[in-house]
Length: 171
Image (spheres, rainbow, N blue to C red):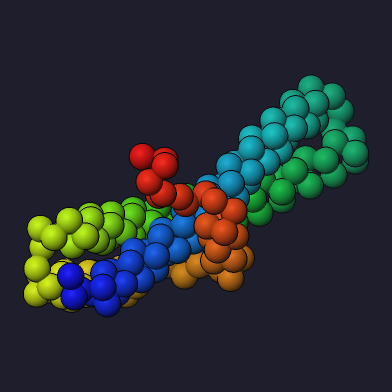
């Protein structure tokens, strides 16, 4: 066939995209979890704050009620400010977009590998596809948000543990 090295290069691109996809989906999940947890904390603290304010208004203003009201006011302010400043929802969306782009490139590489193995694409076409995919990946990397080392390690562990299997027996 003569294009084994070209197929190997396409396979490397596919695998790199798979890791990129997985690490960004991991980061998306992490930021979505942070957003949810802080949002729940804000709801709970706001409910407690409302109760403390109601108690403070309906009774004589005791020092304990003032302290409780003050503490929960500070807690709500800090949590809401953190949620706004850290913008976990937007970060999660940015990671989802990067992961989806990697997924698309990964599928393109896999499809082209199949075409090459079937003999329906020439070596010139495969090399052209490698160039196109390489440019696309550089664009993704230029735009992608940073991920943590733990996101990448979880991606590698997930692949090793079989989260990403595309063996013939699964199709």
